[in-house]
Amino acid sequence: MPAESDVIQFEKMIMHLSWAIQKQLAQELIEFHLTVPQYVALRAIQHEENGCTMTRLAQASYQVAATMTGIIDRLVDQGLVERVRDASDRRTQRVILTAAGKNLLSQVEIRNLARLNGFLQEMTPTDIEQMLGWMQRYLEVMVEEQVE
Amino acid sequence: MPAESDVIQFEKMIMHLSWAIQKQLAQELIEFHLTVPQYVALRAIQHEENGCTMTRLAQASYQVAATMTGIIDRLVDQGLVERVRDASDRRTQRVILTAAGKNLLSQVEIRNLARLNGFLQEMTPTDIEQMLGWMQRYLEVMVEEQVE
DNA sequence: TATTGTTATACTCTATAACTATA
DNA sequence: TATAGTTATAGAGTATAACAATA
Image (cartoon, rainbow over all chains, first blue to last red; front, side, top):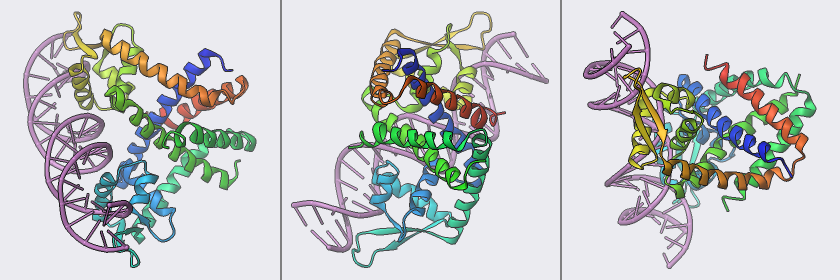
């Protein structure tokens, strides 16, 4: 059983850090003319092979479908994604990345990885494995179990 | 030097986790009629002895002063904080928690700590110390150095 | 009837620029 | 002049409810 003071400090750190990371990400995305929710959506689309349906996109982004509509509208306006009607089920929209969208995502990724190296170079491979495992576990216990 | 694939996986995990934590926090705060920025502000005020100035509050929340005005307005409307003019410098506002504000914060804290215990009980005290150290270091290297 | 997605609406968050009051 | 804070404005994100099209 963990010490009470450690739990309190842990809670404080998680709150501060997750907020700070999001605010700083927002800052960095400005030069790419992206907001954080837009970036989250782009990455969700990127991880799907044949385009991502709006329902899937909403789930992956922890958003309501109506919210996604607005976010995708703005990405379409910027020419970063396109909506394609599914042939087999004409209710479904498949959102796909354009060439410009893929290009922009890889630029942001390069930037992210370069910055992250500054932190990870202090760590041993074992440290990194351990952190990855803990973050994965945190996600399972603290987030995914809650979203029932 | 860390493996390339670990860096990529780490970046992916940090992005996903910090976003997921914030979205889930937002979800939990609904029943307390709070938004995440409001909660962040309340906690910043809590950590100051004699009330928190708007400028300090903006810094602590990584926000612009004008944004804080609106957030504090809504907290005042809810009766959770009050604005008090500083006697020595009448330009300065000191924002303080009301009894209701303190009470609400402690309710949220109880909830947070209870949930966190589910995760931390799997960990040894050494694990927790190590995670705290890494999170602290991440904050220093990846966030605070950037906010020059 | 159920599902997919959008539209309408109302409110919060956000930054920029212009402003007021005080130092 | 400089600083602390607010107001005005415009746009993005957010959820709820009502809706259209398709299954």
